[in-house]
Amino acid sequence: MISDPAESVRTRATGSVLGVGIAVLDLVNELEVYPAEDDEIRALAMRRVRGGNVTNSLAVLSQLGHRCRWVGTLGDDAAADLILDDLAGRGIEVRDAVRVPGGTTPTSSILLSRAGGSRTIVHFRDLPELSAEDFGRVSLDGLAWVHFEGRNPRETARMICRVRDEAPDVPISVELEKHRPGIEALLHGPQVLLASRGFAGACGFEDPDDFLADLLVHSDARLCVVALGAQGAAFLARGGRVQRVPAYVPTRVVDTLGAGDVFNAGVIHGLLHGLPAGETVMQAVKLAGLKCGHPGVVMAHASPRLSD
Image (cartoon, rainbow, N blue to C red):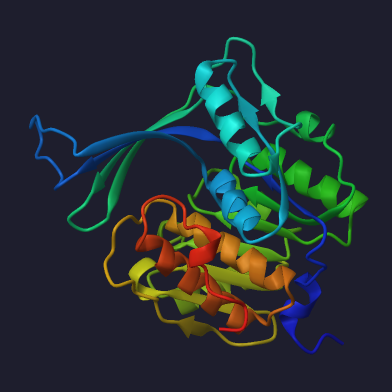
């Protein structure tokens, strides 16, 4: 019998973490305050950076010392070259990336308010999603973890089944950020489900405790976590009870962009190092909080030590 429900998702930290999801060119405009409708204002700063939920999480995991690989689709444009160069520069293996001839790499136009650190995102995508056939050509050798974005459910469910069949000892996590048609297909197979507050609300739940209890019942996950932003996070391990972790608040909130991706990386990092669920989520909340006090994705030297 497993004494700690998180025990079944612990593994060696020596293998690679494979992230499956989209990569995006982010056009970030920093503003003093948000404009009113029909306003014309000047940005304080602008940057073009690689974005995307899974790639952000991999960037953090790489900074924390993990070997990482990414697979997803890109166009054959200059934006794709920027993304691949950025990932390779962070030590993330990109040999499995699928370039779509004539395709346009997804772009997010982001308004970042310096007044409160919050962000508004307008996303444009006109590119095929990664298919299960594409994923079938990806090697599963030497993996310590596989993390999927919860998108393109029908194809992603087939990818999860392949990992379960061919690499049954490799833990799988799925990010549930948005409620998409057919998303229920992704609840069976992963050991860890990482949900957003928005996903819980879209499922009709205001109380995180009720949401986590329902999610655990309707999945075969060993650990379900919901990130609650300024309210911290809550989690439920199979056989246990819902527990809350308060937010870690930096001295000043500078940039909340990507905080959820950093949180997800923190959960994976803790479980890879054999931490129990409570300590794992506490460290992930702190890592995300530290990120909110820094522009861009938090650097490894700003992350909490496992012994903190």
